[in-house]
Amino acid sequence: MFCSQCEQTAGGQGCYQWGSCGKSPEVDALQDLLTHCLRGLGEVAIRARHLGISTRNADVFTCETLFSTLTNVNFNPESFVNYIHQAIALREDLKTQIQLIAPPVDYSDLASFEPPTTLDGLVQQGRDIEFDFISKAAKNVDIFSLKLTIIYGIKGIAAYVYHAQELGQEDDRVYAFFHETLANLGRQDLSLDDWVSIALQVGEINLRAMELLDAGNTETYGHPIPTPVPLNAKKGKAILVSGHDLKELEELLKQTVDTGISIYTHGEMLPGFTDDGEPRQVMTGFARNAVLSVASDVIDAVKKGTIRHFFLVGGCDGAKPVRNYYSEFVEKVPNDCVVLTLACGKFRFFDKDLGDIGGIPRLMDVGQCNDAYSAIQIALALANAFKVDVNQLPLSMILSWYEQKAVAILLTLLYLGIKDIRLGPTLPAFISPNVFKLLSQKYNLQAITTPDEDLAACLG
Image (cartoon, rainbow, N blue to C red; front, side, top):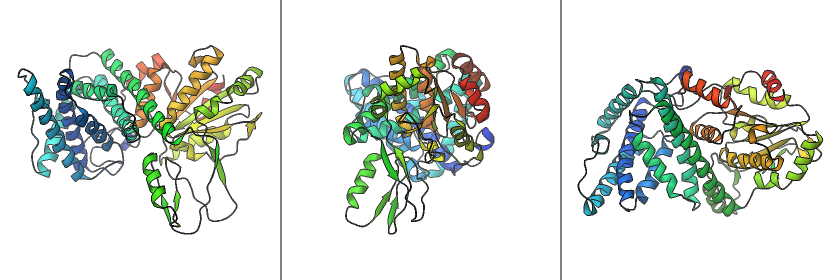
């Protein structure tokens, strides 16, 4: 097996025998075979689209199955066996529809291969396809690096699109991008610059995906407002809910009305629970509408010098001790600075009382990882108010990453031209030294060092 898609990958290089996440070599092979099937489905879907044939089933299926290959989402071999055969069935159905209205066409091997019927056969075919893809792509390590970045990025997009679908928000352009990008991954005629451009397109499409999910969430549940959230547990039966799916949480809440069952969640990952004791709570809900509603106060505070700098400290969490960097960083932020945070990485420090600056909280929880969209809108609005480029704002981004949604968000920030991002706790194994150097030169993307060094650099 070979997998390098998450931050916990073995030795910071890749998992070759068993996934650090718990993914077996067999599941890894099946996921790679599924991705191969989706690439072939994409080739046929592109032709069907050009002929005006509906690809709705292939669109939704591609999104769902890409999502299933994210870190820690699905390790069930039977699921992937079913997905593989469904992909082939969808591919052949589209071919049949195409044949009815268009001249015969020769499809590539990618869109013509047939999977075995047995589990062992599928696993072996997945291994062979993985080896073949790596052998061809790795002739140029830097292009291979960008292809992996693109694959992992569109997996991250798929997660957001899946949740947006559930709330009635879709965009055909996003589905078309999935098909086109997957179908083109095997191309050998594109330059390094071409692949960089495609990676930035992943960022562009992810911005649209986050916009769709934001619209779905806010139109269904309203805009978040600053709200105190209790951290104490109650005696009695309970269900603990982790993840990002607000629709599923809503359905669960409906089903447990008047049952005496308590639901504990915060929409991202589980917070720490305490025994019954002194009430504890945190403030959340500082999404873009809430923050921008007091934009004039924020702008005045910056102009007067009472707010010197903003830090966006957010992203994924994980088990490595080095991730303590982020809580230590927040603790050391000077009293005249404000911290915005989002995603599960915030739970290392979201309950700290940093006080306020003239009534403006010094620690503001923007929301889930997909609420990076809100953070981006806040930054763009402030830049517009100050009539400067985003990179000229007194704002520094200190990001942590773990899996593929974070890859998509990073590509979105680069697509927007945002510079000076500090990324940790380690750099992605799939980004080659030359590609990282290229990104560093263009965007000043850099690895975190120590809280003291990075604070000093950000504050000048």
